[in-house]
Amino acid sequence: MLAWFIDLVLHLDRHLVELLAHFGVWLYPILFAVIFCETGLVVTPFLPGDSLLFACGALAAVDTTGTLSAPVLTVVLALAAVLGNVSNYGIGRFIGPPAFSGRYRLLKVEYLRQTEAFFERYGGFAVLVSRFLPILRTCAPFVAGVGRMPWARFLGYNLVGGILWVTVFIWGGYLFGNIPFVKANFGLVTLSIVAVSLVPLVIAVWRRRGAGS
Image (cartoon, rainbow, N blue to C red; front, side, top):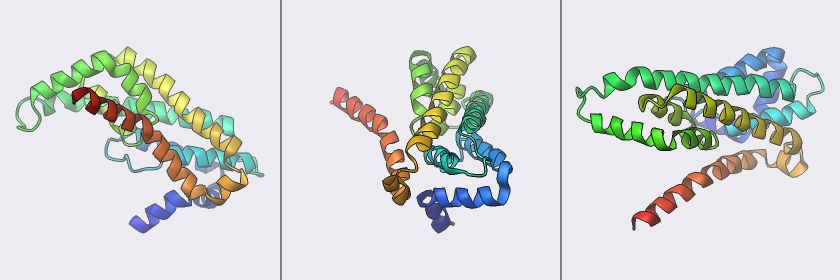
């Protein structure tokens, strides 16, 4: 399973070609489900996100069958990303109060209060920026729900972040994914995309440590 997952990440472009050949237009709901789960279920942050969107854009640019369309992909997968975050937020909001009721020693009420305070102050920024950070992208809406971030505020930043994230990577792949160097080193490029996505997180942690020292 691990070997298959590594191969999927490193050769995502090849797997997409195979899926397109087998499923045709049904590839859209498959991609919708992957992006929805990657953003909507806190237990599935390992699913491909940035790299999948980039690969989809690259494939749409060279699909001679006309099955994959970059504009349609943008709409479908942006909807998946937005609805995924809504689902994750709802789950966090639903299980938050019972989980922090005081019955569980590790889940103290003060932790919930701190989370609520954080999202009251930085919630919009956190929801927006986390779109470009693997793993945190999956956790942020759940924590926002637990922290009772105001629904209207969450939804606004969720819409902007989801549409921006999908648009950047779909059209980035569409415009640059078939450059010979990128195509010949697609696995390394997708890993680089993930690494670059983590840069803001590293900078934030470094600044926080500097401020605390």
